[in-house]
Length: 232
Image (cartoon, rainbow, N blue to C red; front, side, top):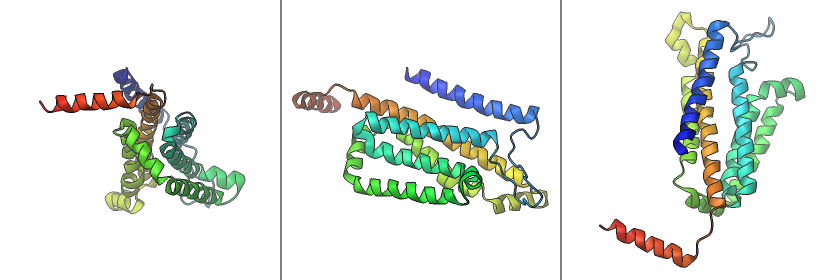
């Protein structure tokens, strides 16, 4: 069943990416990566873009799945809660424009500080439980994919999407929409890895939570048998 899941991930990512690119090529400007709201708006916004909408949906799904893991797989709470909190921080950041215009100016910054502080405090307070949870689930394909997505979002896209970098490359031909398109699609790639990693992690956590407990004697016997077989 594993290979079927991974094929499903492949086709899902390929389909969404194909649909977005075809949408733009068929109806130029439909991705709305650079919308100028008024004459005084020098930078425009990409908040109405289908790309950013998909990113927000993915982050919401990550929060929901991690919440499910925290509720139904108690041994993995120390991992699931910080990961879900991190996804929530990113979701708030993605919705900053709407929070500013609908709720209050810069309210998204306050929310990020509150959620981020709670995540840091929880992680610090449950350090030992976090180590135990990691020991129970590692090696974990899901956590590896989450880490890969984090590298793209925290490091890679921050440098590649830097505006002076594109101004240097394009020179007099620089247009901000080029930088925005590259940045948003790289972020989307990172979020693709996050949702896949979240699903795989949840499946692994569920398998651990619902696995029949083995008596200590049987675990020791199986370990001795595995050690003896590994010597030859």
